[in-house]
Image (cartoon, rainbow, N blue to C red; front, side, top):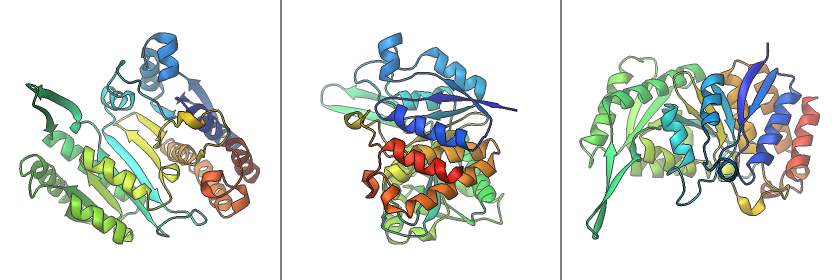
Length: 333
């Protein structure tokens, strides 16, 4: 039986990298019916909004979406299309696997950990105001409900992925109430998972530890801002944002997406690296129990990474987006 999945091509290089991913997934013969909807600057031009109602309706109906990068127009519409999607769909967990691949130039080899970031509150709740004309104030929201929920998600993910340790990241030594609550909730949840080791690390120390000994970590759980910063920093350990997949997950809805920007300066030039979106597509396939197809694609990707002449230019090769995709499909067939 075919599975209907929402596909949001996005802006800039989005249509190119999502098309590459779609072609690769289709080449595995997984039965997927793609429900293609538009968001971002393309939608703004057509519908006078960067996020038409039909996008939300499609995701709510299909429960699973694959999304390309979206540019949020400055001074128009939502503060952020990406943030709004997470909030309106209650996608409370941002999941960023950090995994190195042989053949991709990186600072470390054999890296394989996951960052789980609380997605709905913290400073990214966007509650801020001016204090006269001399200051601005942002309010950081940390709740018991959201903190317990994300900690439980991290431990459950660790169990499913065979990970042995969960590390909670915070700044509770200074932010004793807000981060203190997050840490307390993580500690309380950890008591229900005695088979998984638990530790907590202050965020600035965590930044140092990750660039020194990233192999020491399995699953990292953090509030919104810390998780965002650590995710991008960790991508730098394995070759950059172009190698890092991502997902935003709620109780019954998940949106899988490349984590880099829309790069409008190279859009339509057939030079974008679609790896981040392809790896996000692998995550998506696993979420709908298509493990065989997911593993086939990852195996093909691993083979391609070892062949310098078959990589995109940013990875040291000479191929364009389409040609790189063609090489992966050759292996799959």
